[in-house]
Image: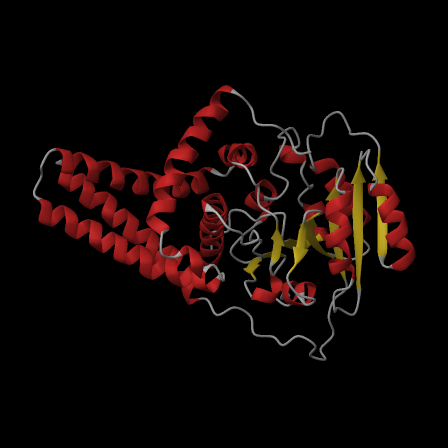
Length: 369
């Protein structure tokens, strides 16, 4: 195969992903149930794990406790905190009777990271419908619980939500937010295609009975991260998974403010993808291969003074497809300010993700704290 033939092959590969997978999110209309309708709504247990998160809980937890929903509880698992987290939670329990605090002083030796406290929180939940988020996250509206639960149907056991980062000034903020949106475009689109493979613990809901029927995190209890994506990767199916992207269902959190902090966080997240099911790893790997190969072959052909018109034609067609498909997806996720410089962010992430994956081969990332 000639170099141009190889470029043509990866171009077609890119088109398949853009138009047959990612375009589904751009076309998705979502669930249109109105908030406050009179049909019976199931009770919900919101579960949050916290470690030295007094500052975050002080600002975020009241927004969860004051949700406009008829029947819910909030459980906060205080995991070995040595700040004022327990003092704050005790005060909030006096004001909010539907708040329950669970204090854990020690880990079990065979569990790693967040999985033990999260398991305790889910086990302690009073209701079958469990909604997960983190201490550093806050809902964008009082209808977060209502919107997330509205995606459940008799056959649905998992609802994947979206958890963007706050919009701030600077290139790093845009890069972090594009990376987050790009990941969301993938896992939400795959779910709409009938191949759900992950969710994010910042905004994720599933049935408690599914958690125990699947034996929770036992199959990957020694892996330090993956309490969200590895569990969903194992139990999610076409028939039992839905998504919710109504803007009132979003949970937002503050992004890292330094490149080093973000890379540390990203390395931890990337380390779990090696444990995905083989079919999922293949599909995700082929997409990454197609993107990296297209840019690489384009640069090689330019350096060899290959005929410019056919090469640039493929580049323009790919760029147009990317803008059409991803622009619709980013608008659907209310991230339209990221549209203009998409190719620039994509190229930066190719180098950063590649470097982080190489680094993970030589040194394991830091565990959840």
